[in-house]
Amino acid sequence: MKLNSKTLAVLIVVTLFGGITFTTLMGWWATETSKVPAKYAEGEAAGEYNPADIRGSYTFGDVSTVFNIPLDELAVAFNLPAGQDPAAVALKTLEETYGELPVEIGTASVRLFTAWYLNLPYEPEDTDYLPLAAADILRQKGNLTPDQLAFLDSHSIDLLAESPIAAPMVETTAVEVESAPQPTPAAEEHTPEDRLVSGKTTFQNLLDWGVPQTAIEGILGGSMPAPATSIRDHASAQGLEFSTLKGAFQAEVDKAAP
Image (tube, rainbow, N blue to C red; front, side, top):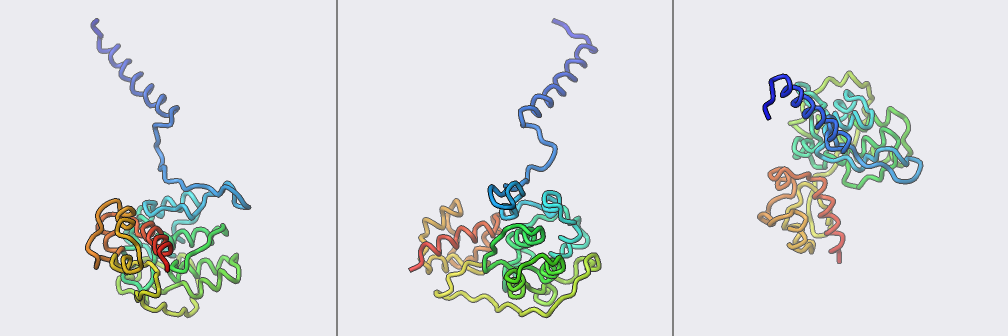
């Protein structure tokens, strides 16, 4: 059977657009990001997106779109680079950017900020910290409980004062806040008594705290690196999300507690 050029052109068009229509109906064709968190299943927030499901692979643009938080406020809160589109900055890069701080600023920080910004249920861990600018934005909104305000007083850190890499990156005039003096968190030290997983925790610390090597390798999905390697350094080198590893290892440490 011979096809002339006109018939062939029609067949190509029908095949192309028909295929797109079919895959759209089947849910196989997507033109927008699929980075959508789970929703609360119960309680007053049932049906709302749950900030606790925000992943390190999300960008600040994803967070802004899904949770309807102005991008400029997110940029100020987390001191995002002025020369870079804040919408394109992945949350997991925070852990590397602020890796030299004595506390953790990362994906968990964004979860906390997002939840309390929107007055949604969220129970932070004691290791969760916010940049001072982010804490000030939350205070300014005026919808925090006394317990939440007390948590911010002891779990916020001035990025500009604590880290030489955190020199001013964004124009902070976008959000006017009054900063109250905040206590400087003590530098992290790892002793057999603290059993608290953080970026400076090494794999040797995990072993010392009673976590079996098999459990460590099960979480990593491969062989454990040199014992002196820190969890954060390994996560950065392997492109893994530190906050996810931290939570999994903390659960193993708690399970192994004497």
